[in-house]
Length: 62
Image 1 (tube, rainbow, N blue to C red):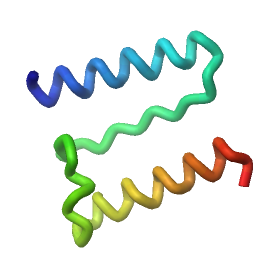
Image 2 (image 1 turned 180 degrees about the vertical axis):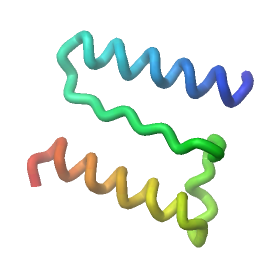
Image 3 (image 1 turned 30 degrees about the horizontal axis):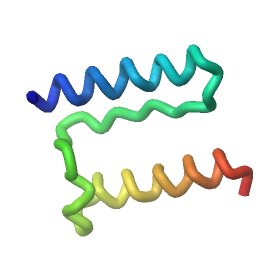
């Protein structure tokens, strides 16, 4: 499966969650790839981690 397909399927899934009333945030990181977060020293990977923690905090109301 191509990375573009994974991206597109993720966006479709997020839209379905939104339509179902599930609180959802959709973020796209251009130029990255699946599992890019594994490069812990890369600035974009650090941003992804920070964004995920922020989304979890917002979702949990903390």
